[in-house]
Length: 315
Length: 315
Image 1 (cartoon, rainbow over the protein chains, first blue to last red):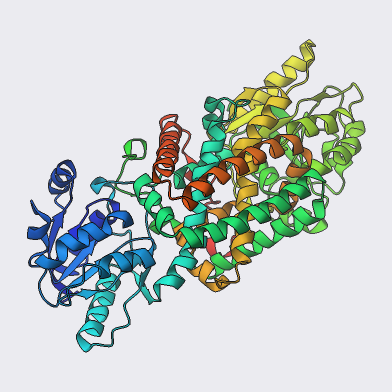
Image 2 (cartoon, helix red, strand yellow; image 1 turned 45 degrees about the vertical axis):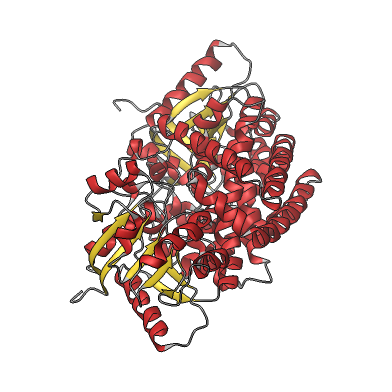
């Protein structure tokens, strides 16, 4: 990078995503200076200790000079944080977020719009099951998709803002796509929200079996269960907000999932091996499509923070 | 290893597991000689080309001199393969298997019992989503559990056979446990069989959504879905047989899973954030138990064959 995309950015909320943006922006020279704020005193201190950037004592101080403000808080907190930030932002600055649900996120950000800032919701398709500022790492967004859901404005300054935000995420290594928020929420409901809900559920089911001891579930988890526990270890607050704010799309996927599962259940009960064989073969074909499309770089983008020790990495 | 546990072994079925046993037995000196057989001409040729061992032209020739015969075929094929093998085995030799369901496997092996061989069913809790002889690698069983479900015999020679088989799997790097087959099937139903069924199902559901294009599902699969497709890429024949032969335990788990999912569904519909928060927090605690128990060495035991190229590794 010869020149940073933004002379100054502010990151509000320094969990896994916020901390990773801070590290990536510094590492790849995407921002001249990085201001940080977190509502938790403890997290602010940890973020400062990690050297993630200039930690401000108030939200207002953090955003005052920023050319781009990135809200990295759970979707349920977006409205309040946006309302507190916007009046203190520079005229012409960009306000974006990283929420996993975009319809509700856009509504929350737009409610704070005073006509002076450019509101451009966004969502990085990247993460790990870790939380907290210690979990952040610079390569999290590399080769990951970043979806922007800009508003309908054709104002030249607004479009220049979308362009700048695109270049910022590209500088962090992301591939940037633009789509409308309703489509985003439908796609993510099936590719991310339903898988997480299922993972949370199977972990709970396993631990409520009276006929199998919890110790045995842990001990023999390598047979498949362990992979679900990793997914189900993601931040509870973030996921609660996802399901509360993308309700319709998730319930639609869930209804179909349960319907399909009932068919498999019946095939098992009645010993319909041909039907099971057909479904399982189909699933394998789909996996191949993902490998062929080069979307399987999971070790980098949806894996573990390489800087965290495995045994103590859970926060 | 100073001395091989068995002077000679025979591996029947040279897919992922059979080929991995062949490689591990040679690498760690657990067997003096390795004889192989696969019912497929093509697979036999590939196994020979890979140098996995002495590939025999008939099942009978493969087992004739073996001190231990390992049946590495789908559970549904065990009865026929055992019936064909036993009459040609040496008196006092061991017959074992690697099937994921042990009640049915034990019944299939016992049906072939002529009183001359020692039948000791077994199951390595290790695997990858790959299939075929090329997928095998020597470290697959390292630090993985291997469950033996011996019969009730207290005959000295039989117990010596169990001891030898235990030492064989330990030589391959496994941690060996003994339990009865009914308990095995209950534990594996929840830790392995249900997770796989759920993964197969969610992949099918995702690809039947009319409101989301398949290309989009592939493109944005990093949000969680991709992990399910990996699990769902496992061998369809093997998994069909698992569900047909561990029906009762799987249906019991599945009933509970659906019940629990209905409760989550209702919480989403009615916006019960507290309930979602409680369940998600609990799942995270369980993940921690798995990490603390050191059962998370997934990169080695349930990961990808390190010798296979990622892009062409699907068979």
